[in-house]
Length: 139
Image (cartoon, rainbow, N blue to C red; front, side):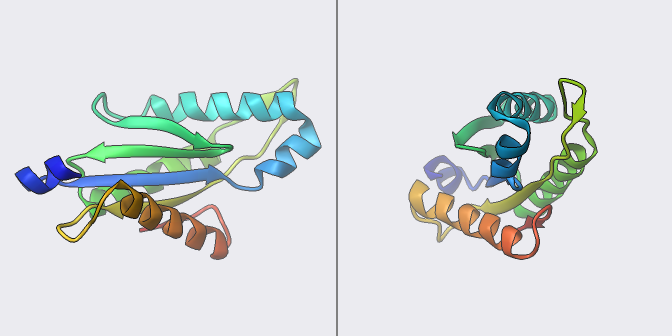
């Protein structure tokens, strides 16, 4: 964030989680849930740039830091990965598991404080995506 402020560079943050992930574990078992997490991460990791940073944030929640990506392009990228996940076949032990994700996007601006505020903004948008019915992007 401070580098972006210093050099006038964009920085965006995508936070997303798997919709109804508890149901995946309850219906298909924890091994299936583990498979879904790993497969989802590999599918998305293939789509990000080398300079982007993707990490599991907790449970079934992930974050992607997008250096030098403005809000418009971060939203476009978020929508792209949402569609990719929706169309990906998650198959565990011959059982297809339908998976979607909800996504919140924030872009650091001149008024963005520290990392906590930046994360909170993206996280609030993620929860707004859930309130809107899931499987969508809020930026």
